[in-house]
Image 1: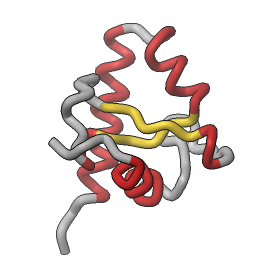
Image 2: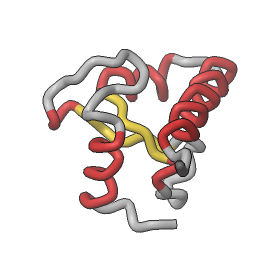
Image 3: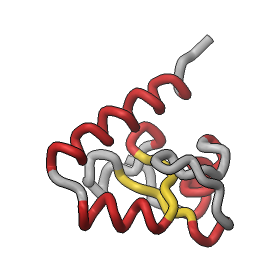
Image 4: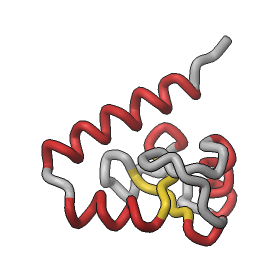
Length: 87
């Protein structure tokens, strides 16, 4: 996959309109993080990365059940599929 660089993270945030894809808030730039949808840090492709605010990211990793995490993965994948449609 691609290198998990500042440039790549910036591209993901831009694609996601600088908005958390769970709570839909637009916090300050510093409160946004990039989440690996499949939890594989080596898989840093645009299709596996999504913008979350720090609060949702922490909640996602610490407080969600495996079932909820799977539902969120499907949600993220559907969102990205829609963003990556070639016209």
